[in-house]
Amino acid sequence: MKRSLLILAAGLFLLASCKPPTPPQKITATDTGKDGSGAQTIKGGNVTLSLSAAGKPASYTIGNGTNLLRTKDPGPGFYMTTGTGAGEKTIPFVSSESKDGKLILTAGDKTRVTLAVNAGDRFISFRLEKIEDVPIGTEPTLNFVMNFQPKIYPELVPFDYMCLTGGINETSQFYCRATWPYFWQRGENDPLGGFALFVPQNEEEHNETLLRIWTEEKVPRPNIEGEWTYERAKQWAEEWKKNAEDMTHLMISAEKPEDLDPLIDYAKKMNAKRVYMHTDTWRGQYWIQDRDSFSVNPKVFPRGEEDLKAFIDKLKANGIGVMMHTLCYGIGPEGSKYLGKGKKTDPRLANWGKGKLEKSISPAIGMIWTCYKWACAAAPTASMPPRKRQN
Image (tube, rainbow, N blue to C red):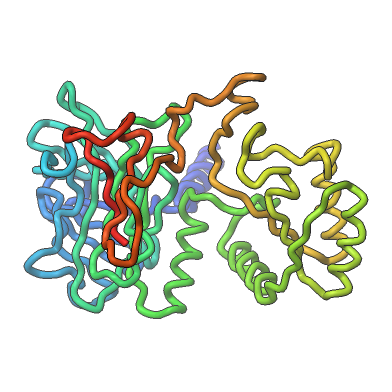
């Protein structure tokens, strides 16, 4: 009996020892290597970001390389602002703490921000979890700025629409910037936002890191069957690249259902890889007037989406792809399902603007004087001058 108990105990010990080890925390207090307050270190496979006790950037290194941040001005890192323009006020954080893989930042006014931290082989990411203990009457905006040395081009990848990053010129800048401008206006189903940060050394590493972020972080991805893994993402990217190599297309228009089949035959004859439909064909209106942005033209597709999908499926069966032109998703002047049948849009809603010229135009005039409807009811007055637009 004792022998059996010994064997059982040994077996349980072996099972316990076979349990996979808990992965190390991505963020720890610099001095202790554990959860705690003070300076923090975020460590990935090949990247390390160090923060001061106040949460300010101290260094960013790749491998055993030197600090890539601007030594004299590494940037504020995370900080908050209230107000805009001349009235904008900056609220810095004064302390930082790591706990259970989270970075907790506290400001002088006691506002506290918690971010989940992750670090892959080549990137570091932050995902906002909460902003709390905010002073009554304030709605601070969370921001992030980090400055790098000349010829070092960092990149940020936003996880969703709640966090905005550097924009179109980011890859040619020596700094990175992120902001959460919509936090206080979000709905209950909106995400909280976040971003991944990396510094690519070459094009191959750039693409590799993007693939890793795409598969290791919770971000939008293609609607495919099966698990979204690194290997599957790489396969999908190759398929997309192959599909996009030949962008020859035939722009088509139709007025009735009978026009569609001859267009398929003509596209095949022209060896077009895809057809391109404007909104006036598939929706029936270029600018929406008495329908919605995703309405389907009943004159060409009598059964609506069902007929449109059938046409697209038929094109695909013939080896032809589809591109569909669309515009910004606004509300038309009347007939929108959001307003109700017979209801018209309030004319005060945003539009492209209407107005009149206040002075004649000639080559000698360097300024165009206009008066917009929303700016002045009749003639311009001293308190409401006409809008000026440079040539």
